[in-house]
Image 1 (cartoon, rainbow, N blue to C red):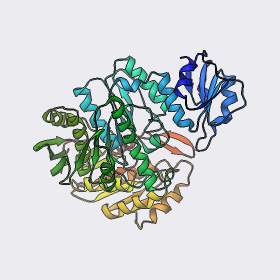
Image 2: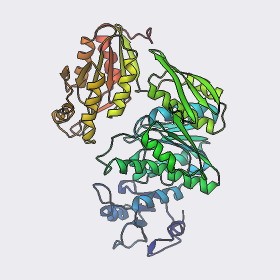
Image 3: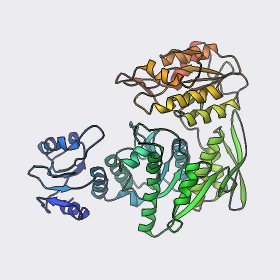
Image 4: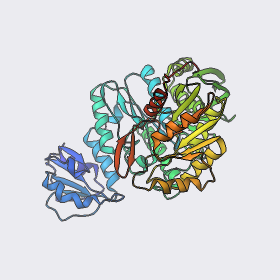
Length: 499
């Protein structure tokens, strides 16, 4: 691509040593990925200043740079006020704005993103065609290599290159989780969203955001991007918002009805898509969804009232696109279980649910869900991640104290923190654990050994993850694998008779 295209894109910015005829071979903010002919984008990061890598990038072959202040180097440079935002614009331009070639649906919120995007993926695979999903569960489409990454929302560079690959393979739809980090750091600023969902907001990531209001403002950016796309294509686009959540109500009231088709969902009588008559068993749930004066019966393998809300969100997005509600309900019933989200393992009359719950609200919701299928004692084992918002640790302890009969504290990616210090912060909630066992594998085995038939064990925090990070070293570790191994060591085969 000609460097002149970037000069035109950033026509409101200062250009030093312009060379319009220069050919650009790639765009990156990572000096290690620079190839000859690259455009290198530098910005001040959270802990690293990208400007310090400009000379290295030039040595590796960068022929132009974008920076947040003028730099004394001999290559053309574009000076911008926000390097992250400029990176997003530059990579979208370089790859030909691939997200405009198919509908992209974004899901944001503290809890529920993975389940909603999983449901949407399976709905749209049938209703639209080849679909790409991006989120905490990884990146997947039948036609491109699957992979997982360290973040819910990949970088702008990764996203637009991925979209270009998907476009070139004839992809037809994208569903993606959109994190507050991804929004605040402009990873998704130049994605042409055609629909957006907001699930809920509770305390999380306050080690990154200044406060809860700043966290909420970041989530709302998704709907600003949606509104911008609606104006660009001159078409109302669907905004699906949970109105059982106070922040959802605030968001819904702020959205433009001129640009967006706004639908509220929840158990509230005011909801456009309303959940009612919820009931569940060990094998799944049944409930009703009301939409445009009609009521539809829904069956799902997912348990938990909060999962009925997640299903309502996916249903709302699908029917907002004009798809038949009866067909949508049929597809929801057939949707496979979400990996690591109340994923059951059964043995000896005991049920273990492996779940990703890692916030106070998430743990509270999961415990309430499994309580309804528990005939004996409800056990809960969890820890809190190192390097994360420490304020949520006591919140998780309080949730376990209120809803579990027996609590076990263990480690969950302590990273560089002392696990004992993390446990101390959880104990500030007043929770009284049956025992503390930092070795998560031993904690799982001991809990299963102490359970009786009819007991239920919620193993929370890791869900689908297959690693444990201790003192900067990543070890393979899977809760599901460890639970199955624990039963196997006891001479018990996994059973699904009670599910």
